[in-house]
Length: 192
Image (cartoon, rainbow, N blue to C red; front, side):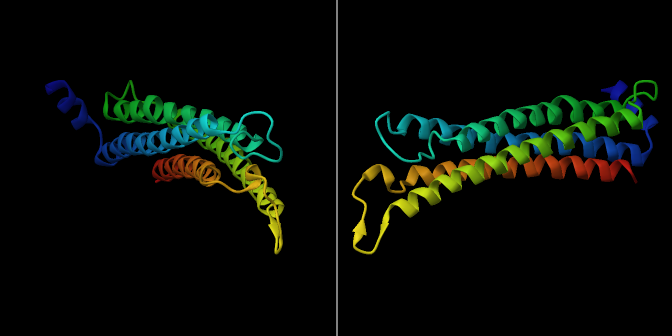
């Protein structure tokens, strides 16, 4: 306790604020991303378990390309969560420490840029996944028939699980947005 207090007193108030910002932003970003990733993963697992088996015809949002791309977005989100906990939080701790152990500004900015790049790739994948899923739902909606020409094939009707797959994709997009906003917030704090 004494050592932490002594090293904290060596840091300027602005540096202490920056250190606290890194730690808090890292943890808040991690927990929001984790909650959204878990919810999305559960929805996608549930959708895969309820997906119609072979023999059905027509597009299927539960097993389509959109789900696969959204899963790739979740993988990138896992990397973003790693950055939040194992890079941003330790940087905050090191900033409070002795001047010899503090990370260089250029190294810290590079970590933030890496997070921004990963988040951009993740949000792109998630958007592509959501678009593909919505496209499959539109195809299902158009194949249901109009007026007195109603399709009687139940596999062509939009099911509630189809909408949940879209929700999973939107959750991943939101989680990626949180990662981008966190990185931009830290970059803004670094440039002050």
